Length: 392
Image (cartoon, rainbow, N blue to C red; front, top):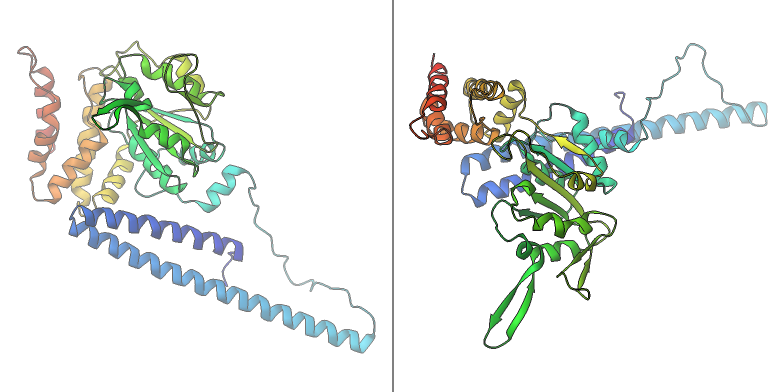
């Protein structure tokens, strides 16, 4: 047998089950979109994981059979010695036998998470500890705020964490509304049969879900009314309630004790201005920490493209991510006003897989973000030059 204990094998079996569940969900999603190529890819990966799962079960059975046989042999030898000499015989160790060193087990929360949960392939982290501290915060119900440029994967990360922790996922985007109060609280409705009545929001339902919702507050910095922060402050702090209006006798919604909040914010000069930042009161509510999620290093982003767009060639994935890095370097040097996001890279990869030339796919996806403004085409010319250099 190998060096794995039966506990370690059991952990691997559980991990493999979780991966199989995720792969089946992704396959169903691809099937609902009619993406037969992606369905076939996930079917192949599921087949591989099933084979791995069966091998782990076989190894576990072998381990248990071997342990049982060894235990029976020792017991028979003990009984034989007791019959010969009388009394109980103390266990002795052959001095030539090397003592087996037990592995050191990290019994902390993060240690247990590392032992039982693999970092998902569909999301890449520059530092693996980021992933495990986020899981720890969900376990401890410490809310998380993730900041970073648009398209770097903040929203995707929230969905992945909800899937891993098996929490019902509820997403609320505040970049698409000028009335956050209606989105959070509900709205007044009217019909001839019932007259005027109040319809509670999806947000209210999510707060009361007794299975412990994973509530994603997406793009909280896009609110320009100021209402969002005022409504959410008592929700996110120790009071943990939502008042449905501002009157003294307002109806109050009490949060389920296991509801968890994951917020995202776009930070950067193209969103709030270089000198602006999140309100201090917002930051204080997220006791699990504020994670500054940046674009991935080129190699890791290339790996991500290969996982999320399975049929993209290694060379195309490399060229797409090298182009993105080139544009981001210009952005950091303040030579461009907008960077290329990971979301754009994925879009380019999908176009290439479907038959578009790489340079045309880059132009189609990226150039609309660099329009000619008041006759100034400086940014657009630089981006076109960067695109053309990828064909060399």
